[in-house]
Length: 185
Image (tube, rainbow, N blue to C red; front, top):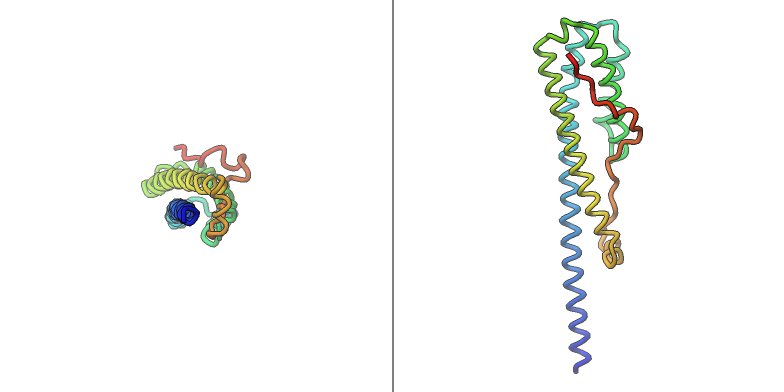
């Protein structure tokens, strides 16, 4: 009879452990999903600002078609990206294209003084800051989730419960993003 109580006690402890582990993994997974959603919201906001910015610059710099095409292509790549890695790659391409666009804008003093252009630039800078904050929050959530999945004895049960590690939102080519988007006036 005592052996039965010991077995039932061990099963109860195991069940409680699995319950707590599962709930904590679900909490971390939801936090990572929320953070990814925040990133996509900010990317959408930036993608919506870019056509207005491009049109403002186009009026002044009609002969810079290559820059506008690069920005448009990069924006499309971000909008169509699937998953963390593809989105990060598209982000790097867009940041480089935006640097070129702002370099063109620097060559036109009237444009730099244009109120609409200045407002769009400020909104873009604000959005870039929000994207960076969202990336940090996402990567923090991924770090916590991945750590929880890797720790023993969670690593024994996490796979059986359907939890997998997530990818960090990383920059592949640091040279393209070391310098922030140039917004000098």
